[in-house]
Image (cartoon, rainbow, N blue to C red; front, side):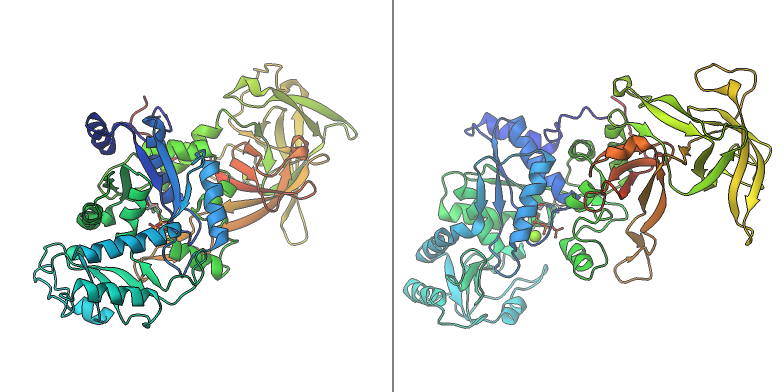
Length: 554
Ligand code: ATP
Ligand code: MG
């Protein structure tokens, strides 16, 4: 696996840019992560967080957390808190550099006035529709606004009156005066301020004009002394406008915008709109539903911050759009948990086995190692007695070919215990199997190095008398590809299933978020919301089998 430095993948094109810049006048790197507080963060944001905070760490620079809350309609305190929480959980720290773009509204207004005074912005009376129509196309230039040549005085007066609330929403805009025939449509006199009589979560009703993203963002970066403004590819065509704003206002530090390709994950939908809709229509159990790829969802699913940082290192950074196989994310959590968590036995879909020749009142304690990967996790005592549970699927009355588990007449090994042979199948009135009768051979006890016979199957089990009941949530992909659907996908009705089974008594002190490997069943985490001492609930993080192989093992 990639040598994980968690510092933002080294050796990508962004490193080359920065190395070059640091050879020149610049001596310190300063990045920022600028989420819009209109939803919970998802795994794509984790990529951006790892990149921005990781680069700062790597170059001994700084990374700011800046809430991009210039849009008055959507922000929410809950989102701000969840975002802070998620970034900290991922292991990053903005120290004392927490900013809100809305706190720069005064400055932004002043800069807009400065542009007007320089003859670089004008108040336009065209409607949104008219502006759109006059923009031209990729092959045709746009047409200039009839209001483009207003005098500076008139523009200053109108802009101030816009601010004072004298006009209705949409009646006027402030536009940058750049070039209506620019080959880049973003440069065709873009709107930089709009009127919106809306209450802002931070500034209240102070403002009824709000800056557009393309105007606000470079200013926010420049005010904070950001040196490298890293964003996703859809802003590549906006870079000339970003530079235009920076150069027109004549900032001392000129941040450099660098774009990289967004993370896409196979069989997942990331956009906030999609996630928000699922949450608001109660199709999932909140923003932290373990099936969601929100950071809070994968946290509740049992992913560790290390596994996500390793994943972000592993996928790297580039300008080419691609879809990363979700199996790669699963690989990272397996690799992380393998040496860390105890391997214990849980029976998810139980069926009872009675060992008819085992003494009725006896319980013996068997010593079983906690991890084949990590000796330091020690050993534990596992009770064994006459009645046990095994997985339903570890028994077949009429075995298929190459079935080496339990079936009538066959002998298997019980992990850490004895060989048992199935002698009888007991059914209820409906013909359903009620219990399985077996005999055990005392000579085969684990640790005695029994070699007289070999068995092909080893199955896990729990002692019926002492086992603790537990609920297991098993997950499949939340969405499935669907060519017939307009969106290209549909919700998977079987994305969650719940089973009731048992775990070893060793797990009696389980706390929410404790993680285990349940032998043969996968990695599990105690659910943070619903796991209680008297009601154990486990989420399957990931099964044990992997379809993903890392390309190079370093
Ligand atoms: P979404 O609608 O999916 O939440 P967004 O871009 O609207 O995405 P923002 O809050 O504006 O979300 O994003 C904050 C930062 O995270 C931005 O710099 C953005 O480029 C980055 N980002 C968002 N989605 C991804 C992704 N899938 N991969 C990498 N970076 C991303
Ligand atoms: Mg956004």
